[in-house]
Length: 441
Image (cartoon, rainbow, N blue to C red; front, side):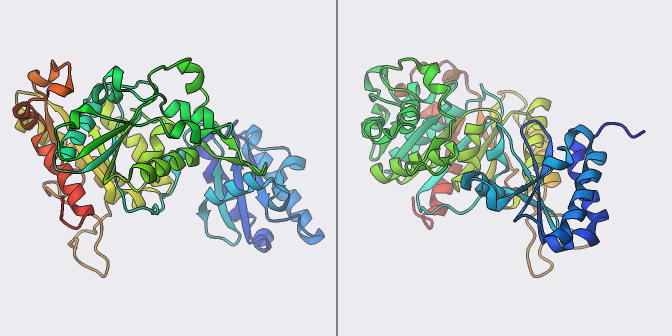
């Protein structure tokens, strides 16, 4: 007797089942397998079948139950019909990814409570605003400090910079850039809870403040903090940030990810910044997925050379590759070597580079057949050698410096300390902005 079908085996079992029943199912054209929140699978057809096809589908449903066991719905509940689904539910089917060309074309959709954003295939946003996301899998790697220093550098060069503190569970960037007395009345969590009842505009006009860090600089730093001057019941509001909100016409809901994008677009329209910086929550939280995958941002991947770091990035990259998202993202990725130690720096960065290259080679770069070069063929593959300094795996170093490690107030930044620790990193940020602006900063 065959053993139970485990979660990771479901997709392949369904593909094999459809292929075995192919002659009977060709008339369907399109078939979507939907795995629900509990991991059980049912199938979505465009419309109810005619009598000729009905018997074939009943047999298919029985075999699906035999094949998948408790991971399948009973035959009488195995099928749903797009034409009878609510509009917002039917719209989800557009995110299903193809797993067999068919006929019938077989697609697979995972309905999840969390993690959906990481599987989004990015599209080009309708904006010319430069966006840079600061992301790390682990906290404590200097990501928020780096974002604050980058904002200072860009403002020093005359840029109008908007910074969003999206690490809502562990806000830190806001306090680095805004003293308590400079906080605006509201923050990002306030906008989410008010927008859910149609009052987002009330909050929007007073949720951004200027940072005194830029008071003597040629540019400006605007900060949208996680919370305002009076956080109120912050945890109660935080728990409501990730809710889909009902549309005004009563026909469905607006996903919370789309709401966050709308907030960002509204803030950009209001402040008209040259550059937007996102301090992204560490880890694989849903909130992190939007600035990393959905906004067309350049993504700085902060890492330290530990087994845990590379294992975590490998999980993320494997997920991107499985969801066919990595090709749309890979030209926007860049690894940052955070907290490079004071001793044996050359050896540390050599080891770091090799592990980063192994990760990108396995999951991001195109495979170049043996005996060919990366320039052979009509389309140049996206592939880089280990020591290519222009590659996304080539680490941009930020050097640990005891002077900055003990710095309590970013408003007292010492340029010599900044250059010693962040010099190469800030040059890389300059290059990102120049590339967006045609070589002009």
